[in-house]
Amino acid sequence: MIKVVSTSPFSDQKMGTAGLRRKSKVVLQPGYVENFMQSIFNVIGNLQGKVFVVGGDGRYYNDVAIQKIIKMAAANGVSRLIVGQNGFISTPAGSNIILKNHADGGFILSASHNPGGIDGDFGIKYSNHTGGQIPSFVSDAIYQETLKISEYKICDVPDVDLSQIGHQELCGMQIDVIDPVNDYVEMMEQIFDFTAIKNLFKSGFTMRFDAMNAVTGPYAVRIFEEILGASKGSVVNYVPLPDFGGLHPDPNMVYAKELVDFMFSDDAADFGAANDGDGDRNMILGKSFFVTPSDSLAILTDNFQYIPAYKNGIYGVAKSAATSTSVERVAKAHNIGYYEVPTGWKYFVNLMDSKRITFCGEESFGTGSAHIREKDGIWAVLFWLNIIAATGKSVAQITEEHWQKYGRSYYVRFDFEGVDGTIADNLMADLENRLSALVNKRYGDYIVADAGAFVYNDPVDKSSTKNGLIVRFADGSRIVYRLSGTGSSGATIRVYIERYSKEDIKREPLQMLTELFKIAMLISEIPERTGKHQADVVT
Ligand code: G1P
Ligand code: ZN
Image (cartoon, rainbow, N blue to C red; front, side, top):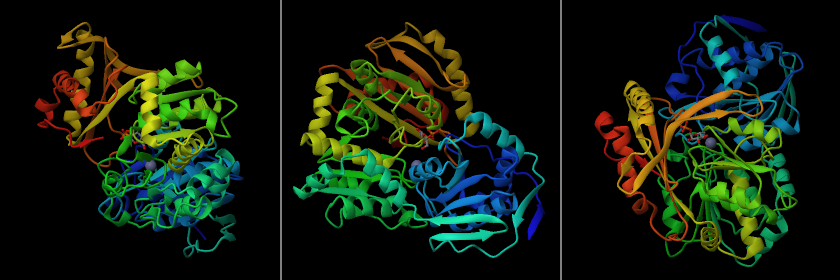
């Protein structure tokens, strides 16, 4: 039943910040998924005895791609696959299933927060036994393999029924279809004080969770409504749809508009949150109040003592270089380890495995801990609910008291999208060359203290990664420039701007950053080179 099919390489199967991500129509090309998967299997080598987890966020083509992967895994000699019922598993739940079952890795079919559907994006994220996405040297080897692949193996059998939980066999491989929600819920119950959160809801506390028609709907309904007792209807857009109902499932002020409008209205709930397509990103809102992800990481870290799983102490904390420095001040105050890594969750994995850190986060609405090796949207929401339940304070109160204690990092990210790839590459290369000459230069109130590429030397595997350019000013303000590695077409230039204030903590971020934005444009020549004077997305 094993068929060997001849194929020819695609030149564009290089993984980005988080796996392979392409326009759905690109992935639909005959052999596209097959070539990529066979390249992974070839690089792994002997698959006898190996166990993998497979699932996805349910987006368009999830159902077709998962059948290909199952049949190819069987044909390549994989021993066992653990598959989410109907092909669903969120990214954080997948990491947990890998770790819990001591699996050799897993495949989550998702383009994360990118829109789905035939005109949207599709993607495949590959994790190894750590439960985290593979390091760059492995993805580089896979890319090389995709460039020379000439055949793939597949079991020539009808599609597997994934609707029923239980065991089955395919071409000598065992398939276990599991409930993708159960293990995840059990893990959350072990981390947080569910009794305290139940009492919070009993006292009349209200929340709205927007699952954005994506994978977290069933997880959120089970946890927030059925177990913790949030009133029915607290979770909205909870049915995962192949095109996310036309939503752009990225939980931020721009794309989670329905939730933001509600939380800034007179009818607002006490607490609001949203997750992205595959459930690893989160946005936190209070009544007419938005918590930046950088602040959220700092606040969670500062309040670890309220959470049963962390109350005896945490190892340390890490953030991506582009994330604001809020959490650095918390790490200093608690005298715990502090690390800055390149953008992408995979860079946190070694730090967690070596017990250097417990918490980590990125400005891009990602927060998480060493309970798994991916960021975790529902975990962050439960962490906030647990702090609220323990302190009796509102989101705004908790955040404002944090600023009073530590000062505030005003922080905004500006994205310039759809830029020609060559223009973007040249812009970054030329900027990098000019940076050292900027040191000591004055721009209005700001003097450049230091400028250069961000280079990360991993303390565990000793690899070195260059990611983005940083301009630091004498007052602690920073501008970070990088190119996105998750887009499916064209280039996106991200400009992250930060300004710290110890006392002046109640101002509008954009207003506080007006001058720095102008400096950022001047230094980089973005307007002249791209024709864009304003960013396309501001978060
Ligand atoms: C973006 C975010 C990054 C995150 C990644 C995957 O990557 O900026 O923090 O880890 O999505 O969710 P980028 O497009 O910037 O490479
Ligand atoms: Zn995601």
